[in-house]
Image 1 (tube, rainbow, N blue to C red):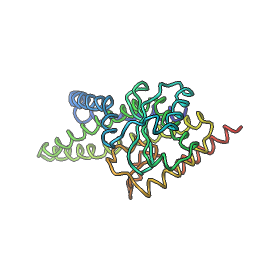
Image 2 (image 1 turned 135 degrees about the vertical axis):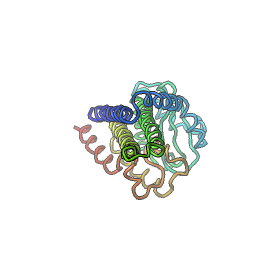
Image 3 (image 1 turned 90 degrees about the vertical axis):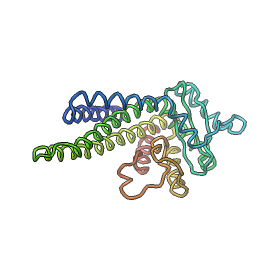
Image 4 (image 1 turned 90 degrees about the horizontal axis):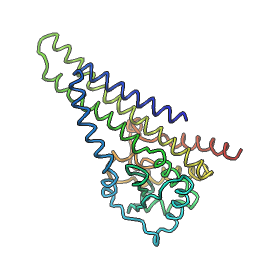
Length: 283
């Protein structure tokens, strides 16, 4: 419940940031134009991004003949969570990971890498797939798209503000206004990015919890997360880091301040929460 409330509060904060920034810098006309462009772009991505991501990682359909265990687990979880069975794909890489995507539960996709199928035992794989099915159940694609839309609007506004600041007034008062505008243009996208990432981390916690309660085996998911983190550090994925939020564990190499802008909570904290959930399940 807290993660749902937290997501709503963070989305509200993004909305407030858009309204305040747009009105302060350009009035409603500038905000309206930026909003139309951002909404068109992001909702286009909402309906077609899953196809682009599958192509990006050269994913192939997972046939029942070659991957019977994966199909069996997904079918059992679909009945348990009361969702249509998603389409299953295999990504040809040794990096151990998985993700769920798609615009809605009827068109959902679950993809596993070859690495995760060879690394995890059946219990651990069930925990991971339950996590991914929870993302579908929670409609996280919709939530993250709304967050991305809001963040994109703020970015558009910031770019317009930078342009206005650079080519703005040349008198002393104009220079002060230009400086203030530029400061707002630089700081607001950073704030928006932090809020957006906080939403992503909140949804990961929520999927962990629902997945663990579905399987009644939080220990298996915790064990899988630790294995996946080690595996991703040893063989990081080669690809577009902008897709990191899709995966159950960040599959890309991170250094320095990148950890601050991570789309995922620290694995150690996720494991601690799962251990507490397991205690509740046992009692």
